[in-house]
Length: 332
Length: 294
Image 1 (cartoon, rainbow over the protein chains, first blue to last red):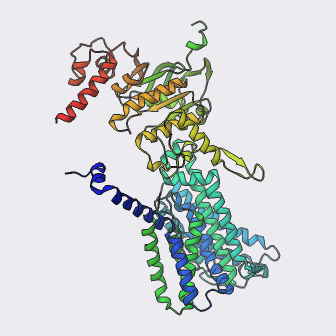
Image 2 (cartoon, rainbow over the protein chains, first blue to last red):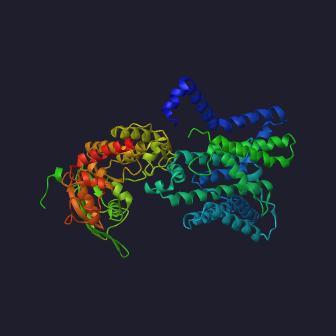
Image 3 (cartoon, rainbow over the protein chains, first blue to last red):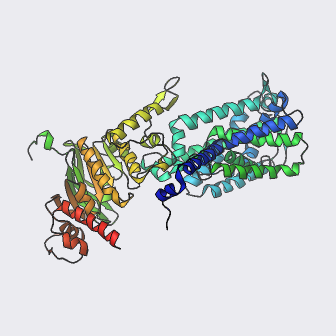
């Protein structure tokens, strides 16, 4: 006997069906809001358990520490929604930061010149990745694995592996300055996040990013220039990673050629925790911001509670798996 | 030809279209015309040139020779958007939808209405307009679907409605449907008849590209048979039998057609001499009885 929807209904009766519907609704709710609930639970727990967690100072600190990974994650969200990935972001952090550090003392009063140069390096690496993905039809994973190696090599070669330190005053302000009570890196992150949220959710380009990730062939057929969309997302990814590198360099008052190593994995984890699918077509900037803050808060909480740093990566891993499972229950 | 009265003038006429790809002649002097509100089927095997011809009409390919006339005036479609701007819309075989997006976004994909905020430099998608327009076109098709539903939640027929709605939203005058039932369940031919009838009522011409005779006979007013880059026959539905058309598709001529001719499936041969609508019914009836017997 096969079970069809109809004889299933008669077997179960209306009460069971209602229960089934409720179960689906609960699942959807958990899928849609699970990460936010988890975030709130963690916040409440840390507020109770960790000394000094709920102080203004600490909260500002958490957001400031998260702002670099956060900046990089913004661009990564665009890329991942197109079903792509960018492994080069950690190397871009290193190379852009190094470019910035090398030019910052030399440029004298022209504060903007090293900034532009650093961002330009990010654009260049993004362009290289996009060219391989779009023109070379190379899988994004492999194309950006290549640019990851190339950008890291460039950072190592230009300083022969040496660390560069000592930035000029205004460059330092980028990392340690405040506007009112808010640190400059936090402001940069928040402004960038608001712009990205706006672009992705409200503009034609944003809509096309989702279309390319959902069905690239269909997007082409309706006349969307998928090449232009893909180029743009990798350029955005390059710029946000470079911006992360500039802030990091400014914050440390110097640049190491190996800076940013491994950032790509943290960033991808944060974006996935925020609800973006590796298969493309799904994701939001607000989700990514929550993913970034959630990871930041957990790290900070473990530090405050004196948990050994050996555990920290493992905890990140557990949260990542949990997030992936929750995403399966999403209503869409 | 003298000046014809407007009602009988073709909406679109393709005249003596030639197209070669390297050594291959894909189109060798093809002419067809479609009247306003008419449903026209383009029949033929794979590689007969149907798709190439439609790509000329939708601006994907440029013909080597020949001309396109719209409302009796010579025109050119140098790009797909030029063709769309003049009211020629394509409904793809796979419907060209993005599953992850909702109905309204799919309808306007690539041609989103925008509104200014803080001046013309900063423009956002006008979702309100997208939603109301989506409702309007789906109502015109008499297939109401919630504009905010993700396309992945829709049935095959609803997906087709969205794809056709996309054409309607941009005031299509001619809709080309590529193998419209290829992605629908078997029972959906009826629905297609309904939809094409509705498009006819709206005064929209339809070209259906198909290799399914039953489909063409069920929905079309006229049809042309293509073979090896040429039109080998042009008929009104009812003038010929399905068996004759099947013969024409595979042989390119009716001269050697015998009513019990080989190369035609046994089923088709037996009912080949009946009229076209009966043929479809007979096929459908046979399908159902066979289904329950076995």
